[in-house]
Image (cartoon, rainbow, N blue to C red; front, side, top):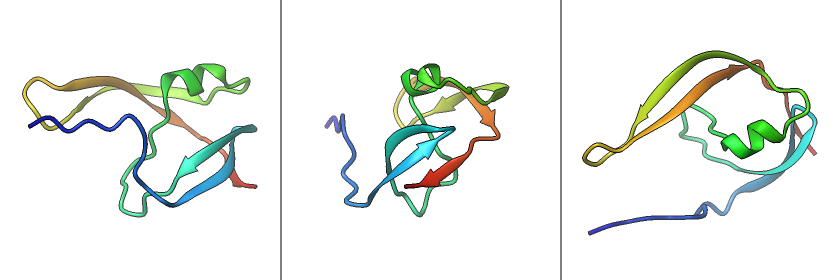
Length: 78
């Protein structure tokens, strides 16, 4: 069985500013990290500093995603 979501199933969304860029954010109260797309990161005028590169291991055979730990990031509910 393959389960694949291309959009969030969460019903809790907020309009926020992320480093001054307006975005719609999904609220996940159980999340340990906040993930943003590379596209969103690259579109920011004031990009946060990249602290280190990481590999995220997903459930499944050989499922990995490259990413970065960045910060600080300013989030403001609007």
